[in-house]
Image 1 (cartoon, one colour):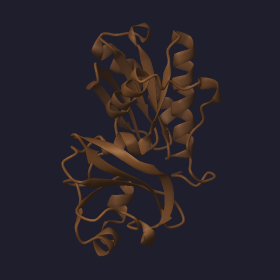
Image 2 (cartoon, rainbow, N blue to C red):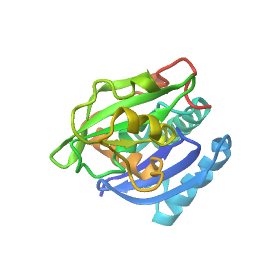
Image 3 (tube, rainbow, N blue to C red):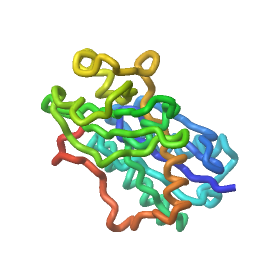
Length: 224
């Protein structure tokens, strides 16, 4: 059994989860706001205890790498690096939007994850459905709200992310065929980060902890 711990601190929700053989197993999420540094160690301890594991039982650690909260990303990455160094574990860097899109089944032709930024902009990533899973098309980009639909494929597109929630009216005007999850839609959790990280590690994509830094996309212009 392969067990990966996932850490997600890119949003105001601090979330830690485990993926066992690729499936989310245990997850704890708490509203952290600016208290991620205080909440994260307890969340990790609680998740491991609930699963009956220790850090030595893990095969790797996955961490949400951004974009997102400047402070939150630094806290999550620093903790993940420390844990990997202490336990001799590989680390996987998971783009936050790649974890976010995993919350929805790949039953639409395309998906667009939007994360709220500052200055009237959003961070965008676009995905297409391939054999029952989401595959990202291109990279990550900051865009003005009025340009968020530019270059999207024709047909229904599923919109996810806190940027989609915040700008739902504009999205509906720009893309009348837009689709949204029920309710407000959840934030990405540590379980999905762990799931994505396990795939990265299985493919030999572990990162060098010494050279790993958060992906902000803009100079300190992510979420506060």
